[in-house]
Length: 173
Image 1: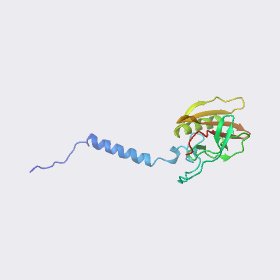
Image 2: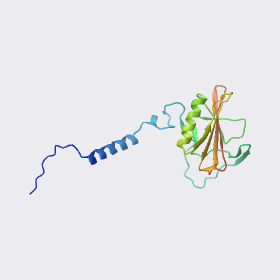
Image 3: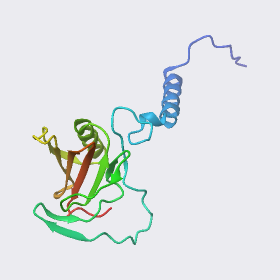
Image 4: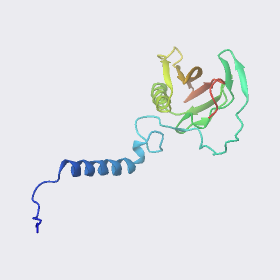
């Protein structure tokens, strides 16, 4: 009859890989909120959060549209569109899908919006250098070329105005 002798050898590669995979899974599932973009405790300047939580109602009616020089736009942004942390609704002087005021530096808010758009699946076609008035413009596309968004970040007194034109050619999701 064969006898088993106690093993003094180190665990095999399979055991080590399994242990490392389990540790990575635990670390990923327990990451602090500060590591999640858009969370209230996120670091690195302005943070971004979804516009609103999806309702789960498949029968949600899309908003109306408005014709502008830029093209037809939705009169709102979908819940999946990134929103700067601390954003408050604003009244812009032009037709846009949505406008918010936020605190911070325009360059930092622009950088954060670029990152948030990319994380949400948008491709950045361009982000302008600051204009004379300090404003910056981000042009982004998602999926089809006609699905585009333009985000303008502009100083307005002691606050920053963020305006979004969300093309009506984009699916409402």
